[in-house]
Amino acid sequence: MAELLAIVLVVGVLAAVLGSLTWLGARVRRRGVGDNVMGPFEEIWHPAAHRFRAEIRVYEERMAPLPPAEGPERRDGKSAHSRAG
View 1 (tube, helix red, strand yellow):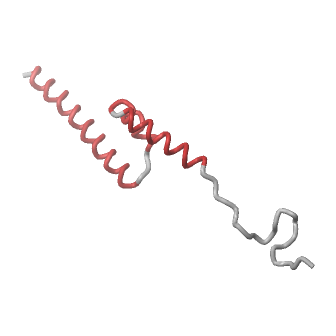
View 2 (spheres, one colour; view 1 turned 120 degrees about the vertical axis):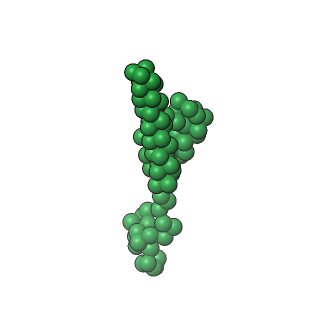
View 3 (cartoon, one colour; view 1 turned 90 degrees about the vertical axis):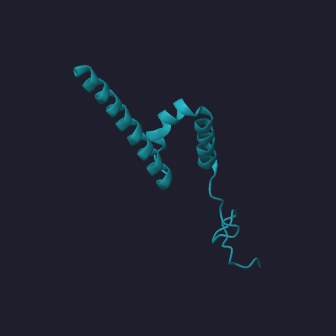
């Protein structure tokens, strides 16, 4: 009887861990956050996807907003609205 209880306990804990990881993965995908939480598990089970997301993250960090074409001040220090006379 004790052996059966130990087996049921181990299977129950394993099912709880797998179920919580599945729930956490679905929640992370819906919200679009949580690479830090699911990153290690993703790296273990799907290394190519992990590397792909890392490349996307680097690409997004490199993109800087472009300055406006005509701002209030040009490079020579003159106002864009002043007339060259």
